[in-house]
Image (cartoon, rainbow, N blue to C red; front, top):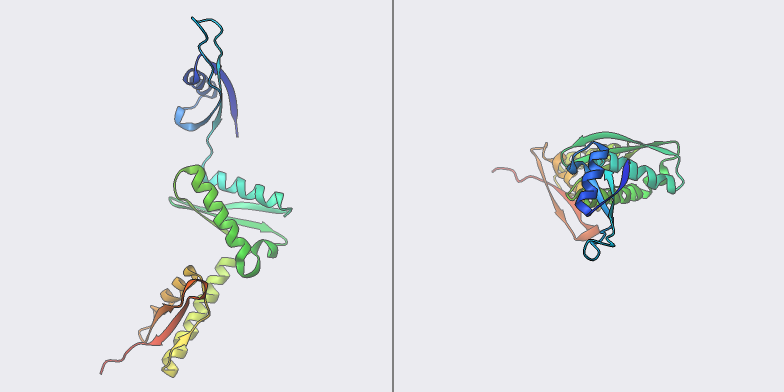
Length: 209
């Protein structure tokens, strides 16, 4: 990221000089005050203000660079690709040979990286930005697995006319089940339980008399 240090009579004067040297607008930079300077006495002995002015980078580039740095420091040989940018979200994909440790058991490590990236980018951007992190199409395969499980359970509930209880799932996974079940006229679904033990129950819909 390009940056420049500049001195001036005061902070604003130093910032203006730095922005002019970089050839950008004030809104396109981040400013770090190194020394606020001072006016001295009767105009003598004054100390110049000093600032470091850096070009801002986009949220998507920030996310890509930070995740790549994290993985490099963890010792993984990977590349982070920018897959999709939407107004409220960014999707990154990790490519490499050995991705199982990055995914973790039941996607736990991948979920943590996703949470960490969302926190970092949102904090630096000053707004909520959801960063999705994918590796080896894990999340895509998980979506397919959960949707298939929901459809099989819905078929069983309709065929046998009794409720089907699915294993505990995260809120996002439960939403996938509810959405899949909506395609069936003969069943309905609801959640039961608390916290990590919350699960979905699929039951036959009441029949009209």
